[in-house]
Amino acid sequence: MELSIDVETYSDCPIKFGAQRYVDDETFEILLFAYCFDDEPVEVIDMTKDPLPERVVDALYNKEITKTAFNAAFEMLCLKKYFPDADYTNWECTSVLALYCSLPASLDNVSKALKLGEAKDSRGKRLIQFFSVPRKPTKTNPKTRNMPEDAPDKWAEYIEYNRQDVVVEKAIRKRLLSLKPPAVEHAYWLLDQDINWRGVKVDMELVDAALACNDEIVDEATESSKLLTGLENPNSTMQLKEWLSERLGYELDTMRKDDVSNLLARDIPSDVRKVLQNRQVLGNSSIKKYLAMKNAVCSDGRIHGMLQFYGAMRSGRWAGRVVQLQNLPRNYLEDLDTAREVLKSRDVEMLDLLYGNPGDVIKQLIRTALVAEEGHRFIVADFSAIEARVIAWLAHEQWRQDVFAQGGDIYCASASSMFHVPVEKHGVNGHLRQKGKVAELALGYGGGVGAMKSMDTKGEIPEEELPGIIEAWRRASPRITRFWKDADNAAKQVVKTGEPVRIRQGNIKFFKSKGF
Image (cartoon, rainbow, N blue to C red; front, side):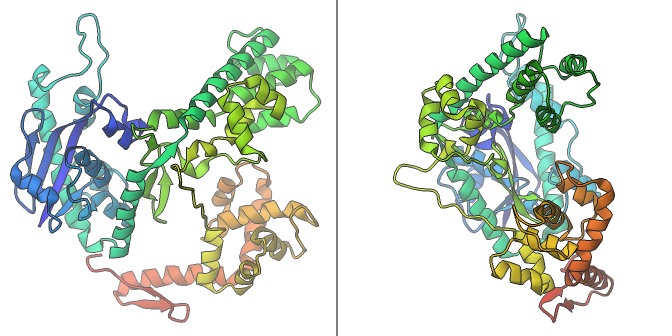
């Protein structure tokens, strides 16, 4: 038996702070609970006045009944607030099922992609904004939220919207169920729930100190630039470009991060240099990580929900959410403990005296704001050059496997193989390593010029060189390029004939799933 579920909720906390923080807020409540057992009609419980039926509550505790929802992680999180001891092992997520099939992540877009007869109710956003989000009080209406009795007609619409979400979720699940992920993927998804529910502890003393010191640094930089430029808002790109163009004697097209760095590398007037340095301070986006931590931390002192299962479509990899752990700035300070203590003292002058760039210190300490519980420690692991290793193994590109086996630098080895010269990091032909790196990141899975441009974020490789680099990389990796063609042909043949196809000495099997 299956129980399909969808909930509509309310919380004063913005959902952008993270689902766990949203649910953790003392104002959180489930407003509507739509459900359906197997193919029975969808029912909606108005939980602002009625409890859940005993049959539903029993099902939530019954490990033999499969509970399903679109983005089930949210429904599970909401229900844990009401039923902390219920069963959360026999749940399945229809959103993950869609992502596994390379479909979009949202209920609406999946239903459109599958051209279902059932569609998500378009009134949803308006109704959510009305009932599920706090409202601004006015002189004529001091209320901070809209209640069902304030707009009975809208509330009736909201109930039908909630009902329709279950109808659509069931239609999607029925269409895709024959393509459901293997059991091991479901086990990974359950592990993902545990990881996100457990969360990570945050050193809020450090976070608050970082935000306070940054405010002081920003105020000082703003006043300094106002004094030097005479501009009312020196953080305005348009105003600053005009001032810089006048001081430098030539027009500036853009004021991106790299443009500022390039200007600072030149021989420029001292006031221009200081203003540009202030610009870097004012544009330090890393501080947003601290703000995200402050907004997302829950009553248990931890941040939850920072990973999205199958968030990277097709590859199925985890994606970052909330604080975005996957792109934290690196740190290279030798004594992080001392730097942390100085920052916690909120002494910007001391930070400047010891390290010379307080803003950079604050940025480097972001990672250290995540801490282990007392008596515990972090065990940190990462796959090194995982994409390059996997494609070399799949394609039997032996020289690449040898590089990894011997602990070599694949970027140098790739550049050396492409350009037929020795390449050493910080050594002979070291300038070619960057081209090897970009090529490795971009080309291993069939990428071309577009992929090269995407990976060459600093634009260090001239566009006219890209086709030659691509050709050189492919010539140096003939087994990989042949593997692409073999895999593509095998997939097409399976779809056409329905018969399994093996490639790479039979080690890789392509087959057509039932219902495909």
